[in-house]
Image 1 (spheres, helix red, strand yellow):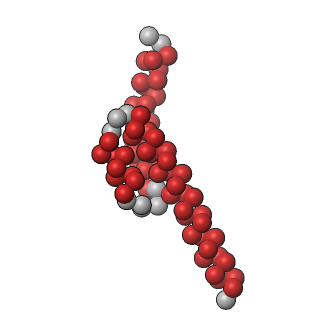
Image 2 (cartoon, rainbow, N blue to C red; image 1 turned 60 degrees about the vertical axis):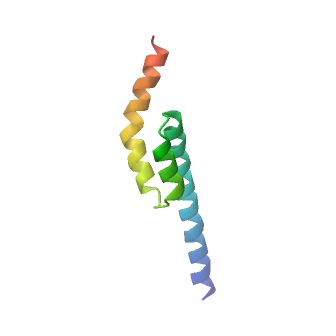
Image 3 (cartoon, rainbow, N blue to C red; image 1 turned 90 degrees about the horizontal axis):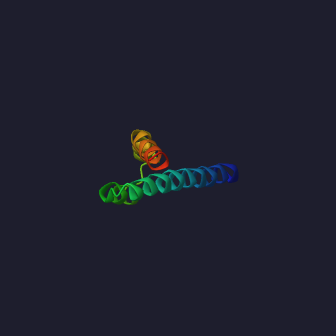
Length: 73
């Protein structure tokens, strides 16, 4: 029974770290792009990082294009 409890605690810790990582990344990008509604959504809803990952993939190109414009005036 102790092994089951240990595995459950480990699973919860891994999921919390996963969620925190993706939430941090998505909130950072939303704040950098001045997208306050997305920032608030990511802080309120915890869905295992899935919306955050989709947001990051969708907006990755937008951030890269802006960075290239800044680097090459």
